[in-house]
Image (spheres, rainbow, N blue to C red):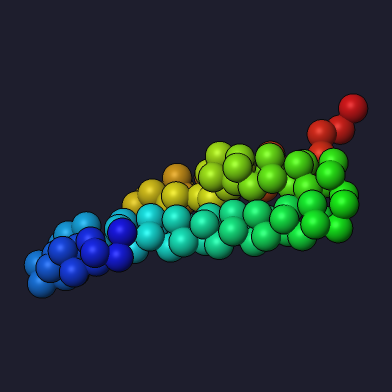
Length: 100
């Protein structure tokens, strides 16, 4: 993805900014996801070396599923402020516990 930044930057010369804003958003989301995934894998290896087999396997499973988990909660804002507010409200609602 780093190789694509110069090509995405060419769009900044146009008045509509091309694909650069969307490309940078995706680049940062991917970088954040990979950072969390690597941290969890390191924690899993640490748990396995300390003979906590169940915790190590559980953390490794979470690390493998990290892109799917973070994909649910990372908001991709649309151009319209009403859509952005709706996305934010839905994300907050999904994080709150349900009342019985």
